[in-house]
Amino acid sequence: MADHQAPALNQQIVLVTGGARGLGKAVTEAFLREGAKVVINYLNSREAAEALANEANERAANSAIAIQGDVTDPAAVKNIFDTAKEFFSAPISTVVNNALASFSFDGDARPKADEIDWSRFTGQFEGNVRGAVNTTQAALAGFEELGSGRIINIGTNLFQHPVVPYHDYTASKAALLSLTRTFAHDLGPKNITVNMLSGGLLRTTDASAATPEEVFDFIASGTPLRSVTTPAEFADAILFFASPWSRSVTGQNLVVDGGLVMD
Image (cartoon, rainbow, N blue to C red; front, top):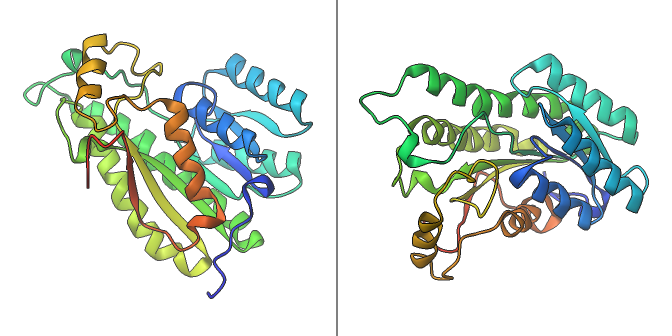
């Protein structure tokens, strides 16, 4: 297909899974700031999601909607897309797979290789891989209607820098990177790009709240920028992959961690 042009950000309808808290909230706010309409998906954080949507709609009417749904459930995901299309009178144009299966970034408390149970792996694979498969498949009809689409997956720099024993989390995100690339190859002829952004520890989200301050300081000292990336900084990088500027970029993994990992 010769024309890979995607809609401008202020013409897009963006689904952010897990979009009410932590990194998801920062992503939601970044897209809203650029004039996009946002579907704020949540599982349990109803109050936070609805408050975020209400604030957005006070600034610009009908710019956001909060929709509950478990991304591991195909029926729930279909409902998210159907409800969003009815609300905005147009299909979702970009999907940000941000929802995180329950996880705390506290290396000292994580089970080591000799004790981790397989159930931890299945839980992470369900949330990170199955969730992305479900949202991608549900998005395809709308992408076809629009003539283009954007899938943006959230990964981790622990692929390249496995300094903490997050075995289950890292393995599932590595599988998501492979899925990103195979889906990019499969869906490219339909003018759909699939990319990943991978960060390190973010300062600070609910998931990283258990991380000791000295760990943040140690990470910052190892980066060229001498800082730990914030959710807002990471979210700004996501905008590139949703924008027309990235129309010829697919199957890529961009590491956004202040230069800690250079790959």
